[in-house]
Image (cartoon, rainbow, N blue to C red; front, top):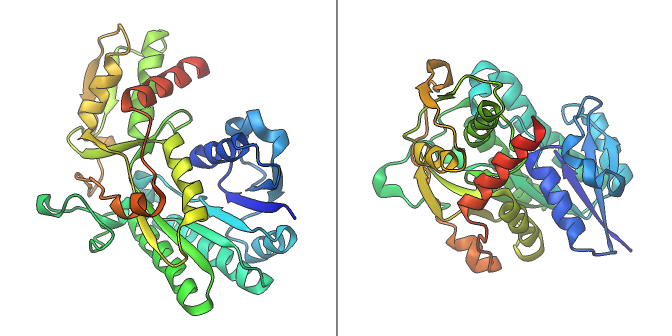
Length: 321
């Protein structure tokens, strides 16, 4: 009997890398399934599209989700689909909470009514911790929630919903609070990808030599998306249900210092312009993870240096433009 792996958000940034990683294992006993909407862009999964079993599904339609889960009967579910851009959550708070919280409820209810017993990875976020004090880093899993955006609130809800379904119904949820991760295919609205795309545009003469930025003083700990998906696969194979894990890289620096690294990879010398529209109403400026619990459980360590991550991201945009 083949093991069925279902990835929600498979056409997105992390989901597409996760599909590629699992396929790279060349395990003939694993079948990959993905849900998509009729308007989902397929560019990210173009290289593996013929090796994925797609189902049309809308997470906010409970019947759609139940039909999909009942049909596939997955053994492992990676729930990655989300409204994941923090600034958008300020403009569309209801949609953000509905998508992330109610979409997760629909998924877990479908599992319950379908009578199946999969391992379910619920992708929460380090944003649930909000703004921490200097004496509270590195951040461990016991850090209090102080959500500083509607997105963070939605992820607190998703996180706790997953825990509640484990307690109440025995559904084998495992939660992750992933810290900053980037790499090729990162959405252009996110800082690292925005900077890389702007540099590539400047190189091709498509943009004036000015990089438009938000808050460059925020401290982030960066991980590569390819290390991230490797961690997620270890998670569902090694970690017990009901648990929660911080996962993050080991390189902490300001967003401005990350931009400086990108600028060493081009011969252009653009000006930097802080744009008010790129600043958040409330910001989270210090994110340094304590991933020791996850590392002890799985033996995982990040392998890809930040310079390679950023170089690959910049080359991704150079090839796209």
